[in-house]
Length: 121
Length: 121
DNA sequence: CTCCTTATCAGTAATAATTCCTATTACTAT
DNA sequence: ATAGTAATAGGAATTATTACTGATAAGGAG
Image (cartoon, rainbow over all chains, first blue to last red; front, side, top):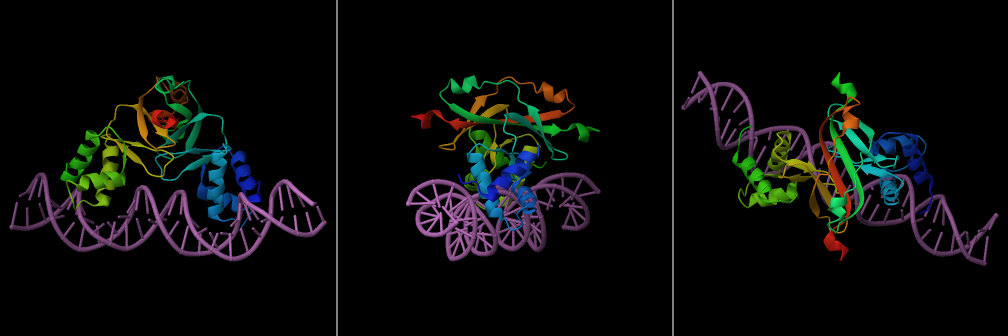
């Protein structure tokens, strides 16, 4: 994988923020540095970075996919009021009952839905 | 919520199959019974049925949302080779660390990714 | 440093999934 | 029956993502 300026900046942006962004938000952010980058380039690089394990995706009930530069396994919490995505530590889990049945688990995603601390007020 | 013929058939279809379908698949299936049902009606009713807790959604890395008439909490496994979605029992989890921090958890979704038993052969 | 190969790029068109809009129909309670 | 509300079909519009094409630039070989 060639390290292009575009790919470098996308990765740098995601690593610099401990938050979750969709493709257009990343596009807008990286355009500050590379004004003529195209959205297609952002999507292509996000895809490759995911493939390479440099970043991870968060699928929620919202239609768009969110990208996360923090790749240590963790659980996401989506607030149904403000839509903010929060990080939490994974609780211990083995998925032993799944692997025992002959299924190979590569990765897992847990998303919690509810009301966040701020929106409860 | 009015129980219309359309809503009834959508729900009946999802309850009759222990599998996961996207909106277009459900549309095609229900059209066998109600030939002139529209896709918009399917989407609208799926949304209401989810709101009402009659069915649940499964968000995966694929772009479309899958609907599931089996609403007892369980874990989904998506095969990266054949894209089949399998059901597994939930492992015990409390999300206590999340609620202890003042976040109210309404529901959770866990999706495992990997290679299924059949595709391993 | 220069050339060469090839991945990657910008720009744009196309596709897929979902939502929105409008006129019409069905149900409910007067 | 009639009015009022809610739901529908059909199609247009929107949003998110992917695919295509000729031009560019990254990285290795000489």
